Length: 282
Length: 262
Image (tube, rainbow over all chains, first blue to last red; front, side):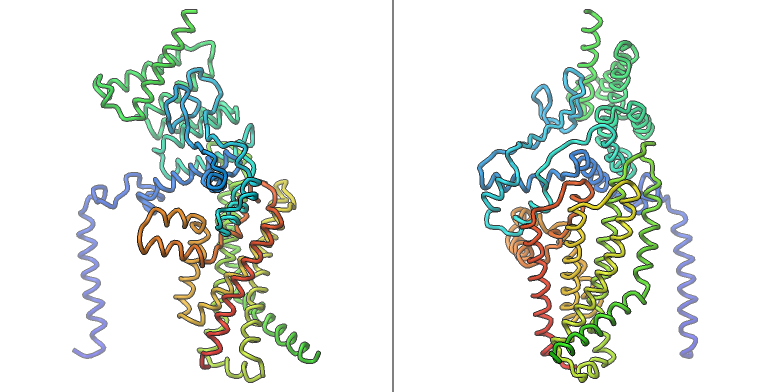
């Protein structure tokens, strides 16, 4: 074999190998391959499982925007400095009206009011002055960081300004349409912070289309209907009853088998039904 | 007096060279097109049919400016010496006569000035878009630009020092990883150190102590959400940190350059 014929032979062999590989791959059920994503959209192909992480990050960003751009982790930095130096305690969890800690606290309290229930528990005393007085535990880098990145203010976006959160919620649900927290929080912000019922309804409609089996979304839809038609709660009651029935159907009557989210939906559906009954009986 | 004049002339020539080189390469215009290609679709987005949100656009624009400035600073800083050594043009340069220290400083000054010009060009566009949607100048904007310029000075110094030690591609990769890593995770390193054990914890603490704290210069959140500026003592501290870090990198680069054979 001459030297010049080697590349030609290699090219020919490679072409045959490529054709054989293409033929073999063509017969595989792509959907059953482990790396295949269920969605099939561009994001699924590009990011695969990382979409959940991206979605969570976008939701975190929306939360930060709702708090006026304050990243709660950064605020913790500042307060951590205070804790170290001032001995203050810090609470950073969401608390239910019934005393039960819960991550999904978007105003699901007994009174169904407009309370966000977003209790971060940031004490006003944890401000920059306290840190300035006491230093940063001998860490000059931390001293700079808390001053550059953690603001002294804490505010929630209200009214039209809360629209700033919507792009991040949208990005979150685009990355993972099954991120129920993102849908329900977007709905909550649209309804309670922006007072934009039409927008809140669009969010729920889209959420329902993407998550037809989600009890939390169904419950949120029922809440929306209940809140929108305060005088006429018959439609809302039917929806709450449907949520409760679906939850019981899902567990075969044994509520201990329900997932945390479904148990939570069942509990609140019952609370709402009970409230409606009480109002009717008055 | 005459020596001072010569020094200034040498600096001017070196600065001009870096400046012309950066703008002639058209990298900045490529980045501009990329920025427009990313920002225009974003600006047309209407999440859930809602309109009026603009902060996310500012944040994305600032993030792009940070990315672009890093790209320009590292590219400019890392290209200062390797081509001179490869093509042996360092020899006539040093025989002008110009000392190695002066050459290093002049080239650094040129690279920083050129990178700053690119940065200010991007910020001019950003401020233009801010004004277009009702924004305006603020203290935090001035501080953000000044901090960003300090960051660029540090990045160029780091890339310059690295370019005298490792190959250009390795230098670019290492500097980009170090600066981007510190930008996003730098402030969290002490917490990571607590979560891991042994050698890894020591590595975290070491990196936290000596790594380039790019996050100090990041005023994006303050700017986007209108928190107001930082105290001037903090500005002074951050600028001093930048100056000392860049100075240390340059000092190290001067040592390496002095021992290196042309």
